[in-house]
Image (tube, rainbow, N blue to C red):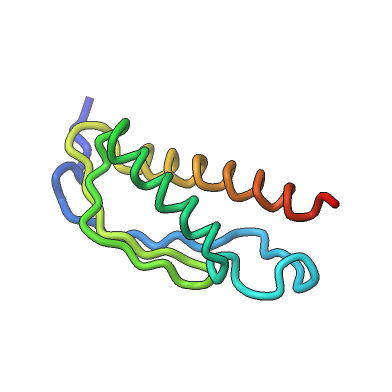
Length: 101
C-alpha cells in the first residue's frame, strides 16, 4: 500500500455548497445563517476529536468554506468526506425543522 501523499502536508481545501436551494427556501447563502455556521463548526470539532483531522484555520463564506488542514495517519480525502457528511446531515435536518409548521 502506498503512503498518502497528503500526509502531514498543509492542504488548502474549498468546500462549495452543492444543490443550491431555491430563493424561497433560503433567500441568502446557507452560511449567512448563524445556526448553520455553528453546525459546521461542531462538525469540525467532532472530526478533530474523533478522526484526528488537523485544522489550522478556516473561513466560512455564504455558500462555501475554505480550510487549511492536514491529516497524520488516514487519508485526508476520507476525513474531509466525513466532515462534509456530518455537517450536511445536521444542516439538512435543521432545514427540515425550519420548514415544518
